[in-house]
Image (cartoon, rainbow over all chains, first blue to last red; front, side, top):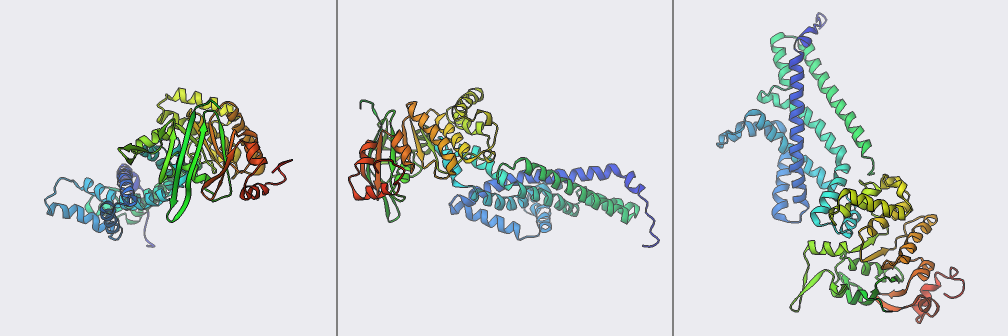
Length: 222
Length: 262
């Protein structure tokens, strides 16, 4: 350690790779969150539907995903599905599928709580002006729920962004994988891992700040 | 009175589990009339009001709006519940103002009024905005049209809620204890709006504990007691000649606000 001489040129020389890798990780997180929100919303409605043929399978899905390590899920989908004759996914698609299912399980719990927390007076007011059932969901329940759940959705995005580092395990060139490769080629251990960590930290922090601004903007709901 | 009957209730019954809350309500509201329901809490006033626009479903009896049964149709001799879409269409013809305002928290005052106009009545945004502006003006809140509910006082929120209900051009407006959740100094502004509406010829069915207002504005007062109509008639009759001990006792609680009788 004492003799370690920092040489930051390894970072500047590879800046384009770092930036592309960071962008890929962000993209994976955002896409997975978007798909996860759709899955989560459908799952949340299934859970509150009162129909056990809908709610039981969804309950099982949520518990299986929540109680299994993410890395295992990634391996299962990427290496396991081809064993069942499903070859259609490349590694990025496979990872997005895994992370989306993972996000969906967590989002379903967030949305379920959100739906439950909406005062029934809003629904009654929506009924009283003559809105039909799906219109009540579309124009009153969902907008209110998204505002209530915004902080949780944002936290999930930050978590998912950090979880994209697990994509390194199946050689997707996101930030962790890229850093490891540059490290292997240059042996600049400290510089590379410090730079990668700094990029995760700065990005996640900026996301948290942006989220706070969004929350303030939608403060119309206590 | 020659005005046609707008709302007619016959033998309306409603139970919650073993508790029978409405034990056969008969009642008429004529076009342009203000009918007020008074009575102790638990007497079934609010439940009846909520049955009129299907927020509760009555178990037996009829509620007819312009002669059309609310909430069901007859299939031979059997009652069949209407589809949600049909119920929604019936509700669109009946406005309701709630005790706790129930403004949509994510929409501005103007957007609250516009929502039903665009989504239910199919009006264009521009037309809806104009109508919303008109009614927000009528309730004295045109300058607040861009405010969110949390930026408004309780009295202002309730006036927006009235504008939202009346902008739909309903046949009938229901008011469910609309001043009960308000600070005393805000009650008058809401009652003022309601009085102006009544004078404009709006048909209103009102549950209220504001006895001076009820006496002043109503054409007809209905005293409900334990799920039944105990006495009904012109305000002067009900307030000055209560024919039961229960009504005398009920009105006695408001003693002092009536200068002479009561």
